[in-house]
Length: 107
Length: 151
Image 1 (cartoon, rainbow over the protein chains, first blue to last red):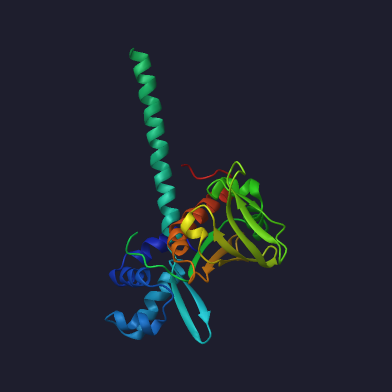
Image 2: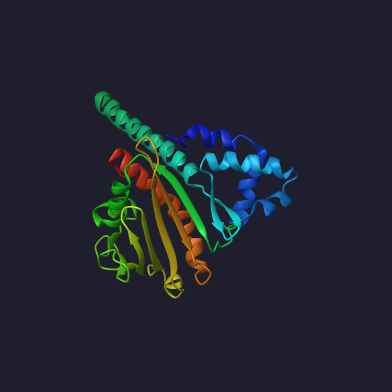
């Protein structure tokens, strides 16, 4: 799978990349030049970080004429969230089932 | 998400371990949408110019209406979108939804949903932002495990 959870966690494990996602959350569909002006870093540095975010699927890009627009794509985070929340739900359900069995045994 | 300003173009993308044909079916058949799209039943011939509609689970209410703009199974589907389940969104202009499915290697496809032309539908823009995430995550789970997301 080209975009697995490891890439998402790795992409999020950097304050500049999280700052880029925050900027996109505030306003989506931005060019590299716009993003670069808000981050204290060289154009090349911002480009590198954006590529890591794109590889992880956290940023989607669209061409609009000559410009490349970047969009926040939170779906991979949602997928991880759903996977873990579902696990907790199952555990909760089985814990309740176990408790019921225990109570019925002792009762 | 009170800080979220309405985005006139929203792009959502994810990889799904499924073929483009399976993903196309999941988007266009009500027995699938019922399992990940808030229980809704999609209803359309998916021919350009035809209506696009989505009904409540018991079919008593029309939740979404629109028109099919482009249809190229199993790669691309574009339709307009107006959400009728809310009075405010129902009064707004139609926006546009584009589904793009690309086969990548290893039996994995990338699905990209672009919801744009939301300039005349700010309430819809705010509403769907969280919705698409939930829907696409649910679609992935359904296709990869055969089971809908819980809850």
